[in-house]
Length: 326
Ligand code: SAM
Ligand code: DTB
Ligand code: SF4
Image (cartoon, rainbow, N blue to C red; front, side):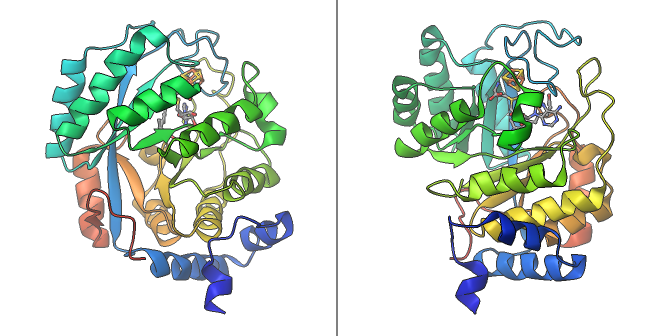
């Protein structure tokens, strides 16, 4: 019975995932927390810090994003920032308790001329004793190997939504392109961080199918960010109807149950979530957050608010490199 609950399966079916998602809420939470406890200390939460290393002016047309040059928000395009600045920001993040440093760039994919700078960023952050993560868009084989050699631990590349809803959100690259990059990253031995966004006007079956697509990859991603859409001004999704928070918790719980050993990250959108909602997400199996008052361009809760939340809930920070209790 135990194995049936928590085996690392990659053959989940749509019917199974749908039944889990739609189970009575108390049964769903109980199952998610039971699975969570088999693999993790339920009172520990991993903390990552994000930095935008190249902001705005992106050629892609992701409907949720403040950084797309095609959206109305027109965030000015900046250059790739300097390595020294990345390292000094990473130091501050480490002092603030983050164990993983995630560097994000508003690119469709990196240019070869930027690779040496990116490698130096990875090496510099690693030398501080932090785990490194980058999110730079699509990668080719050579770029993947160079980042791996530089010591990159994680690569974040989200599938964002279900394959069916994907074309409503992005037209400039396909769902299959994203899966190609994920496979390349995994084959090179870099840990995969991949998840998506909910609250973009998708249907319940899109949330289920997004998680099913991740849970049926050859290997589960090591880390699965579940982002609540932050509606950014002047983007096509600026006025989309808010998602019922209970649906959000169901999504987190399904991610935990389908991918028991992965870190499920309660990512964007915490600023608008009550302490109670975040607590429910942790109970449903979320065990990773972004800390610090900015994500890439959007707000995140202040350090004091997170410190108070952790104290109230008796949560502690997960050590760097921890992969749970099994
Ligand atoms: N340009 C790279 C790419 O798209 O792969 C990396 C950076 S991109 C901003 C990283 C991820 O942030 C996106 O895939 C999306 O899932 C998430 N994201 C971006 N804007 C968001 C928003 N307004 N609300 C929630 N999540 C968002
Ligand atoms: C992820 O899934 N969420 C993070 C990280 N990966 C790169 C990004 C959230 C971005 C939120 C909007 C912004 O800051 O612009
Ligand atoms: Fe560009 Fe990434 Fe934003 Fe899409 S999500 S517009 S690829 S920065």
